[in-house]
Amino acid sequence: MLRLLLCVCCLLLAPLAGAQNYPSKPVRIVVPFAAGSVSDGVARLLAQELSKEMGVQFIVDDKPGANSIIGAEYVANAAPDGYTLLLPSNTALAANLALYKKLPYDPVASFTPIMRIGNYPFVLVVNPKLPVASVPELIAHARARPGKLNFATSNSLSLVAAETFNVLAKTRFVRVPYKANPQALADLMNGQVHMMVADIGTAMTHVKAGKLRALGVTPAKRTRLAPGMASVAESALPGFDFTGWVGLVGPAKLPPEIVTKLHAALTKILQKPELRVAFDRIGTEIAPSKPDEFAAFIKQQIGDWGARVKAAGIEAE
Image: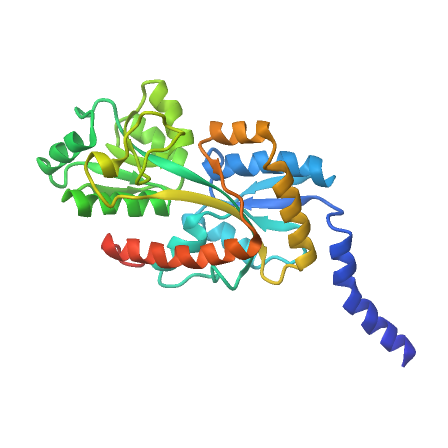
């Protein structure tokens, strides 16, 4: 009887001991997008700094596909021990709930929020050969050719933003879906598609090289990450307002001790001036939050993206 009681006590205390010793082995950060995406860039910066701060290796594991569903589902089903984390965006934890009739995970119940890391604005870009230099010119050009121009989409924000553009501008761009942002940008530069809404960090590199033309940023107001560039809203389409965000979560029931340790480490490294410069370089503005603030933000974003998807006339798949 005593031996049985000791065994039960050991089983009950094992998770607590594991949390106190965390981390004691490599930690995997799952990114639900392909290498070369802004999420991948953020994850690699965080992994490098967290490895130094916490004394174990943090590894980035890209699991793209199905509009981030594959990576999100993988982490939702992982053990809540802190060794498998997810770097989600508005796609996985907000928009997908409105874009799909059935998800293999629950954006709220399947995860433990740790921290909202930051925001990343997008920019409307076109192939340089398209004879337009502004959003009003793009609208006029598209209206004169209904159904003959197309736009690339590679994630929920680019999809909803492009369809919202169609609604507000009364245009008929045809959607061309892609599995990953790099492939979509490549086809845009090659002229196989005409327009795309892409994250600033990736797109502006090609804009500066003359391979793309930027017409406006997607947040309602201008951003310091693209100095001097007007927003789509102020130049032509009031109400057009899209900004991506990224954070860090673990599986549901992640021990509070582990959440606290990860949050403290993130808070410390995000204060480094050199890391802020690196984040600017990939087009992301640092905007950290407490776990409970991030949880409330996710719920608010689910409502916001549901309204956006409905207004854009997108039917759930």
